[in-house]
Length: 426
Image (cartoon, rainbow, N blue to C red; front, side, top):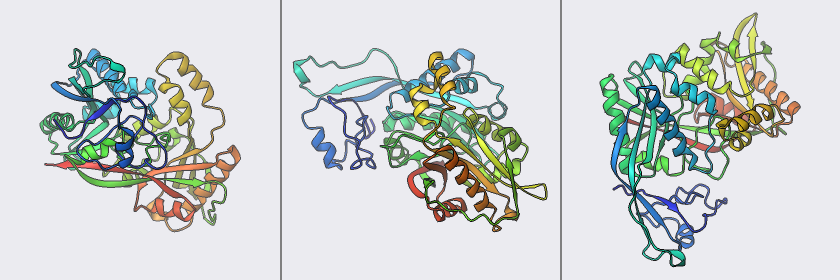
């Protein structure tokens, strides 16, 4: 069995204050790394507590093909994530439509394949249970332990992506998942495996590496603290991204530019694929952005209200930017709208003022860079944010060395989260 195990039960929760927010062995779900004493705080807090350690055996691998099997995958994937108290769910209706229907153009073209593993948990617990209660061992029912959607893109350097990845804190489980994914991907001509990613390789990629005490902003990658360490046991890091916070008060953006700004909707943005590719491709592993993949990204973020501006020079589009209120607290409260009453409440409440905003993506056409258009777009965002009452703007994630990060830092933004993308290259 792998060296990483998950502690499923504690008598009390571990603290989640600033002292341990960046430590992968301190977390309110009590995930610890057993082979290393590492964190003195955890060792002290775990003293005299009853710990139930979950190991797994008798694995089963599932590659859903029909409607009922995909329904089981959706239930399994959701169940795996809801065990995490800090998980921010996607919109359930949109996710269900994406998984259950096979007519989404991008997923249909690449043959997106849901994959999940189940296993029997074997619980080994301390010999003396609290309160003199009897100890129980063994298991009767299978439990879901890992799930992903395999996105095979042979034309992208023979790469398959681990979309919407979730895995239990166990090395053997991850190894089995990667073996199953590689076997399926190899049959389609892919020899490289990259993950985690979102519903497309161009969106939502990377495993969160720090700041686990923060509520994830809307449309940012989020995984339990152990996942990055777990992936590193089988894969190599290949890309680092950062999330930045830009305070609205005191931020500055020079506005000397030859461009004219006009409001932009997501449907209008779909008519400018070159600009959208310039915004997304530099921050993902995918070297290019197909129109159907771009459409999926726009549909994914367009579930919630979106505002955008298009920069034009003599009626030629030269840049754009898209922002959104950060509705993370509402989405978490409503559970992604899985149950109709919460779904209806979220539809009503999403138009209420938000405390902060999200800068999702933006770009300036390569031929027009260096002329102040990026600063002009940023200035428009800051004025809009101040008008609607946002205290700060959460930007990215963007590749750490990108021009977007440089511009935002010059405007006063600070990096507060890091994400790592991993690869296995055969």
